[in-house]
Length: 432
View 1: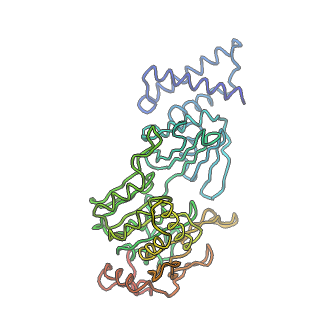
View 2: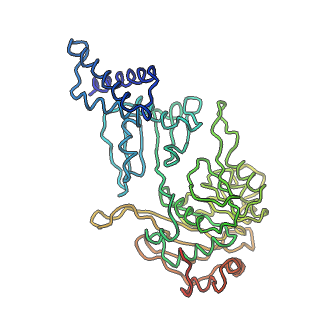
View 3: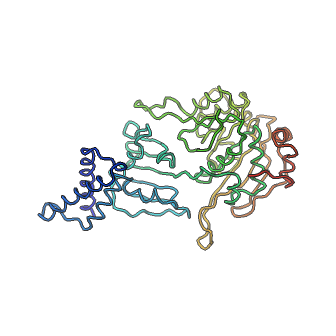
């Protein structure tokens, strides 16, 4: 195997050089590129017959591997094209992936770390992002925005370490989330109602629980007359926006290792404009402190937070804001968020049993909490609106309503003859 991989590396480099010398492009000149690869492999085989090289056992397979490296993404080509593959992991020369059943599987293919690094560089080409010793950590949306790449190289890691996560949020709506059994019709109607008003919502959960997917579906329900600013470190949300709305993305790392415009900068500039709803793709750092200013700007906001429960999400966003280093106490930050966050929607995931006919990853909303405005600087006060005891069980309305001021705000934004009371009691339902 070692000899074959070495032969592949040599042939791949030789074919790439010859294709470049002939000014060929795999997309524009596929037949000429394939002919060049066949030519290079044929030359190698001819020299092997004279004892210079060890002959290839399967020249046709070698030609296909080189074609995938030149025109595709080498050993990742098959995985990237497979609709059932959700996430791909690279550790040195090893490749593994998670499929739609939620299981981690090994991708058994002969490759090297050098080849996979070449594939990563191909994926980053044209993204205005770079990966080298001076910038050893990078994130970018690749493959025409259909996947997010996170890559780490030495000296930060001991070897190439990368994750490719395919986006699956493009077409989801609150109605389709009901069809996926993530929400009940009543819970989806409730979230639709919150989207009509100027509310602020945290979407929390573990990695891969469906936070971004649900927030994307919720954003699609926001009225078209609202000005929406979506800010992300690496763009992941892809939804139609009203003409007076926009996406902002943090700038890539410079040669000096700094970002010219950080996520915090983007939140600042968004609040300086006329914005009705500010959406932050994922809150992890100092940008959380800027959200405390959204209260004074009079806008609603939505964001995702990694947390194990809805209550933990509130603590997480407070901690992130404090880490901004501003001279503000935890009590002040907690009080500001307690008076500005209206709801927390928490999601979780698990893997259905193999014997289930619809086995695979199950992603469901576990709780929707209303946050009660704080009268003191103490802990958050919350009221469960919808709860799910365990994944797989129905999510149910607790019979509780949001605080009167929030309910009134939502009612004023709803169509005539519609009310939050009617939605929660099943007397009226929107078209999802």
